[in-house]
Image (cartoon, one colour):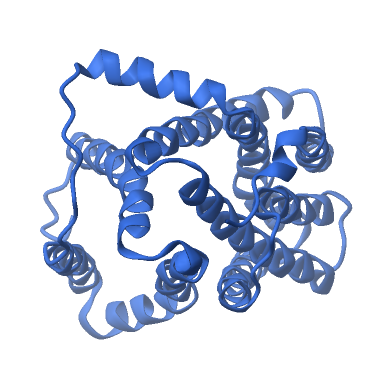
Length: 303
């Protein structure tokens, strides 16, 4: 893009390659942390891994804007690409033990599915998470800007909401560095339900301070949920199965993206946008309540 020779096809190809890379690296990263850190320090390690990621969400737009203002968009894109190269070089310094598999890819897939299906807490959390992520993407990411443009001050309002949500994520990371809950999975389920707050606030047409409060609470809850869930997964799944279980869990989130957008597009023809937002908030609450009815959720605790 920086060379001004990018086409729709080339950008789509790069996006596809990036998506494939993320599909490989995200599950592997969970296993890597488990190899590098002792079990009693996993939660703090997971929080520290997310700390720079969340800090960038707060500071990134400011730094990016300064780079664009000083050097132009090409310099900003070049710097972005360079940071990926630096990160790759840093990862080369890791020395990890890689399990050797002798079976075929199909056999590994069957073994992974068997392990995933046998853990009730894992597949029920994944199923509930699919609903939560789909409702969140549909209610907040898709309809949020529409509501901001039609009923609030547009881009200024939405920028404040997004910035507040990013600040909440950063605050949630700080919470995880200090708080060590015993019931890891139950905490992940409950705090993740905070994502219902921004869609509900926008759907009810609340004033800006209340919408910002809902966004920061959702950010805090989401980051606590991610850290607690990752720690539970690392402590209750053997190292040799961790990548596969994480991959199956990630499939639910990937399915939620097109599912949420498709359902929203269909519902928008029948209901008002604010009604759809309230339905999305209700779906998040319903999925949370159903997941809390699973007894295995309260058995996945801190080791």
